[in-house]
Length: 396
Image 1 (tube, rainbow, N blue to C red):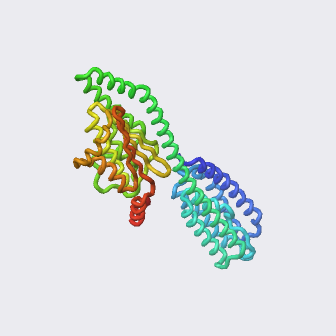
Image 2: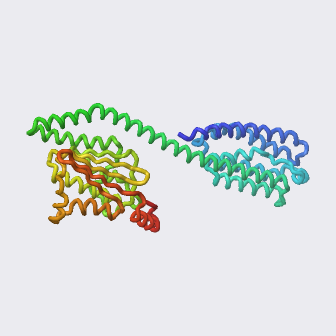
Image 3: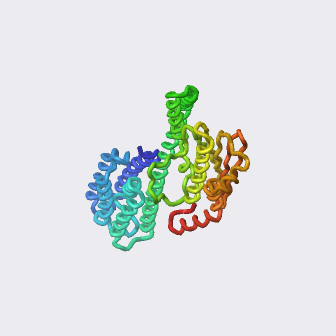
C-alpha cells in the first residue's frame, strides 16, 4: 500500500479539477460576447467539462492515473492555452485575459507531481510555461510570468514533498517490520527459555549423573542448548569457512567469540554489537581462546567455563572463568622457566601488544579467572582506524 498521505492528495486533486472546470465554464460565459470566435471556445469548454467529469476515477489513485492519461490530460490543457489566441481578441490577450482552461491547467501539472515527483512536475510545468509564452506572442506580461512561476514552483515543491514522504513511508514500514520481528523473537525466546532450554539443561544434568550412554546424550543436549541459546539471544554466528578477506571497518567481537559457546562454555555478551578494530577484535578473541585451551588442558574434561563480555565506555572486558581445581602457587613461573609460555605469550603478550592488560586470578580448588582488558582507542587501534579511513573503509 502507498503511504497514507498520498490518498488525501489524490482526493484533493479530484475536488480541484471539478471546481476549476466550473470556474473555466463561468469565465467563458462571462466573456462570451467579447470573444472573437465564441463557438469554437464553447466547443473546447464543453470538451473540457466532459473530460473532467469522465476522468474523475482516473485521478483518485496513483494506480489509475497512468502515464497515457497524464499525457492526454496535459495535451488538453496545452491545446486550450494555444487555442486562446484564436478564440479571444488580441486586445483582451494583451490586457491579461485568462486562457480558456484558466487555472484548470494547474491540476494537470499537479497530477504529474503527485504521480512522478518533482522531475515530472518540472517537465509538465515547463511545457505549460512554453505554451503560455506562445499564446502571448513571445512577449509575456507581468501577470503571465507570475502565474507561470507560481505553477512551476508549487508543482515542483509538491512533487518533492511527495518523494520525501514516500521515502519516509518506506523507512517507517521497514522499522515496523523490524519491531514486529524483534517482538516475535522475544516471544519465541521466552517460550523456548521456559520450555525447550530447561528440558535440554535437565537432560544434560541427568546424563552427566547417569554416565555411560546417557552421558553422551547429555553432552549432545548441552551442545544443542548452547546453540539454541545463542540463536534466541540474537548474537550473530559467523560462517564456518569465512574467507581471508573480511569486510573493512569495525568487527563485532561477539561474532568472533560465538563459536566458543558449547555445552561446556557459556557465553554472555551484550545485546548490542561490541565493535572493535578488526585486528584488535581478532587478537582479543584469540587470547580468550588461549585461555579456554588452558582450561581444557589443566582443569579436566568435566570442567565448565564461562565467557563474559562487558562493553564499557573506555574499554572492552572479556573474562574467562572456569570451575576447575585452580592453579597452584608458583606453577606459572615454573612453566615459564621450562619454556612453556602459553599464558605469557598467547594471552598476556597479545594484550600487551594491543595496549591492554591480562590479569589472572586463581585459588586452589576455586577455579581460575582471566580478565582481558582492552582500552578503546589505544595507539594500535588509532593507527588502524586512520589506515582504514584512508582506504575508504570507514573508521573503527
